[in-house]
Image (cartoon, rainbow, N blue to C red):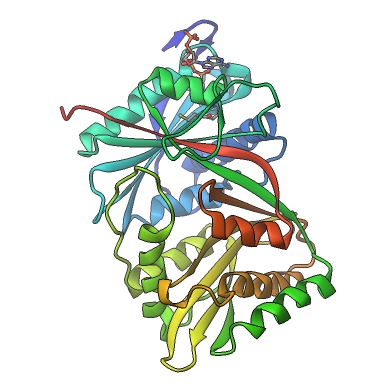
Length: 369
Ligand SMILES: CC(C)(COP(=O)(O)OP(=O)(O)OC[C@H]1O[C@@H](n2cnc3c(N)ncnc32)[C@H](O)[C@@H]1OP(=O)(O)O)[C@@H](O)C(=O)NCCC(=O)NCCS
């Protein structure tokens, strides 16, 4: 199908065993598309998914449903990926919610392909019984005089004329929340980093730290699951009233397996309360296996009763020390935080993260079919 100048077909993405299978052209094509779009839209492709990560999500559907679509042009045997759409949905606790994502190659925009992909992925959500649709749009720092939108949280600003935001609002989505995207240039000066650790340690003597490379040891899986469950309730989410996501050790194992299969390595520093043996805080970094300049800051949480002891700063600073030792070639760490998440932002600013733009969360609820 086509409007304008580009002809395309939209296809479901299969789930082959490996990336060497003939059908894996789609996964490689998605990775190339995402990298091209992020380079054009944000300046680098640091956070674009690899083909391995795309395939890993399709393989691991024990707790989350993932549907992928690609739009292909007739060139290159009909295997040239020029657009893609993704649906992600929690299988147990939020069965009526879907996270949707649509991306079109910069050379093929404004020809109706984004609309065609959004229509198709929304139809997948409807067929799966998910009327609540959420999408995230990333953008660079708004220019000083650019018109902006304020979300209902009252915090943060999103550029009103950004293509992704215009596109989503044109489909009825409402801006819900604004996140700040920040980047930290690493390695940090070891003396400065040790200074953070020493200062935080002075306030958190009742805690023992553990750092894990590429695993969550079985002994800590249940405790880690409690922390992930709290991530689903304690991170500010504006008026996004989703239900608590209850994690167990099995889901923690699935998370780690998904990183492994996606050829991503993880680095976790967690804090144990010495008096009770309870795991009360953690932070996780993830990066591509092999050479590569960047890492992503994944979840960070301190349980409510243990806040105010500098544990958030402590686990992050110790994890950055571990990153500098295990992966000295890393140059940038990327993170996303809700603009109203004052405590997390204060820690990140103290560590040296600098703003590099934002991410807008938008939502629409479609009438059930
Ligand atoms: C947002 C995106 C998917 C749109 O893809 P597309 O193929 O250009 O979309 P369409 O051609 O179907 O555009 C549909 C409508 O969106 C709006 N729109 C899209 N791009 C726009 C732009 N650059 N400026 C203003 N409005 C724009 C317009 O209302 C457009 O209708 P029109 O062309 O009749 O005026 C594409 O820009 C993209 O991949 N951006 C990066 C990823 C992203 O932000 N995804 C959005 C997640 S919801």
